[in-house]
Length: 462
Image (tube, rainbow, N blue to C red; front, side, top):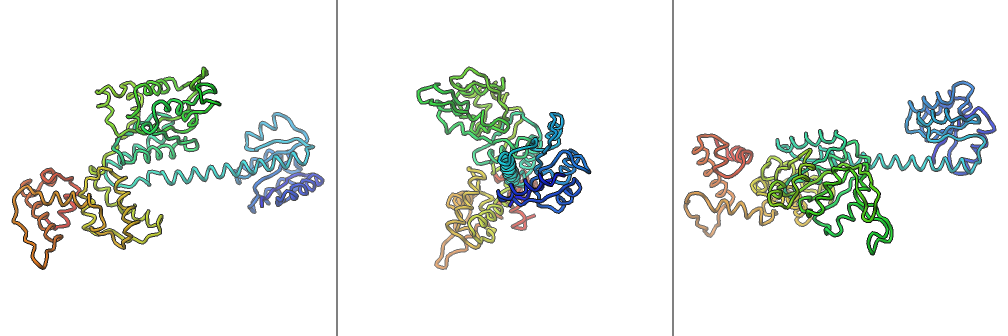
């Protein structure tokens, strides 16, 4: 039940308002002076105050200032029998949501109170939604410890503080371009505005223009009524143009024009509409190469490339595989109510040595699939998909030098021990050839330094 406080020095008004509001299921508190009203507010629970401008002890405007200082969330509606434009303007500036003149009809008052409470509730819900998005898409939710990722996150934090400069995100599929775009939006001053996403490769070119810019009634056969486009809907927020490298040249020129003019027209319309949205574009193409092929406009590239973020593929930042795997296990334990405790070391070795062509998305899908279908207590080598195991097997069975054939006897063999022994021998030889230089040894073995350091430590090699 909403709690309302009436602060008015006239008993008749206090009592009559109390009767009217209680009939509408509000809990009503009364105060005849500003000081008594402030004491009631200090106790907590008051959501809305009906405040008279003229009080015997404190001026109503001063009471409003004190209420705003105590709790800015409280709704205040000013009442007066001596209303002036100056008083009304001053009250609204300080934070009152409305200003009504006495005498007023009870129905009109209850309508104002109801609308004020509903509006306030919606604002609280919107703030809660914004806070949730900030938490979901904060840079701390982008998992990894590699230097390249940390550099990217520093860039994201800096870009978030800038109001509207265009951003271009480049990276292979699955590297997290959408996640970075959302982190920029939800941690910026535009976070209260919409985040509008459009996949440029998923919408046919014939429809893309009307989707982006909207249309007026009668612009084409099926245009029965006017429609806002996504650019217009994104005003005050961000529009995310995913896979912009797949956009045809005819549309690229229209996007370029919008970026230059910050204005656009709906299809079939003559009126120019202002664009107040930050544009973040993303692509898995090398746009400089596409420019050379004449499939991407150079002038559009330079317009988009004001602030640039390049996301490295997972194979180039293998330091992130371990924390990402642990994070996904924890995430899916919560989502699917599973109890997977860990991943075995040999299974983790395979993850570290796999090239991950699908990047973080592929790793996430791999862990998700294992936890849903296998549901192991510990993720083992046997739970990994064939492509992850197969790539390692291929590497180990194709050494750079001949080796003695392995005879499979009746009692079988310990494949893991033999594989690890052979791997340790090859790494030792590479270290000797490189005279102990780990960077050179890693190049000889076609692996990154992090993976090599990990294996050196695992096999106790000097």
